[in-house]
Amino acid sequence: MTKETTSFVYVTYIVSTPEKVFEAITKPEVAKRYWGHENVSDWQPGSKWEHIRADDERTVQLVGDVVEVSPPHRLVITWANASQASDPAAYSRVTFDIDAYEDMVRLTVTHDELEAGSGMANGISKGWPIVLSSLKSFLETGRGLDVFAKPKAA
Image (tube, one colour):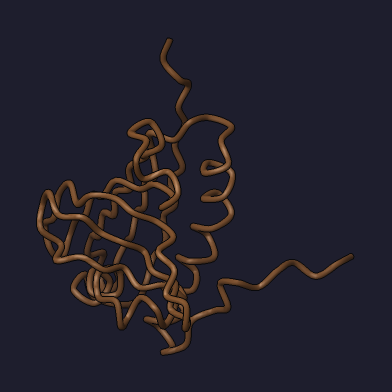
């Protein structure tokens, strides 16, 4: 029996260049400024990548493999919680498509091969919008958002 899968797609437009958007995703020292995590890899197909919390503990939170790299327009990685790294069924896939769009960039993030109804599917549907909003703010203003902010009580 195969598991039911779902996908999440987020599109945003950023006043920037494809090179700066690609760098913001793949350079640890840039990613930590808007994501609070560093994406660490040599970004070669077949290489591992780690999503490391940019704090004193430096906890590895996510892991995966680099599937495809075509700077500065496309990056495809697999994605799993570090605690589930040994379970092939736990992995999903993230594709970053970065397209020049007049004086902007259209960034399309497609997170697919997600188990429908899973904690990961639920988490990324909340996580990607704030992370990508923070990326946009960072590249356009130099200041990211607090991606760890919690909703205020009503």
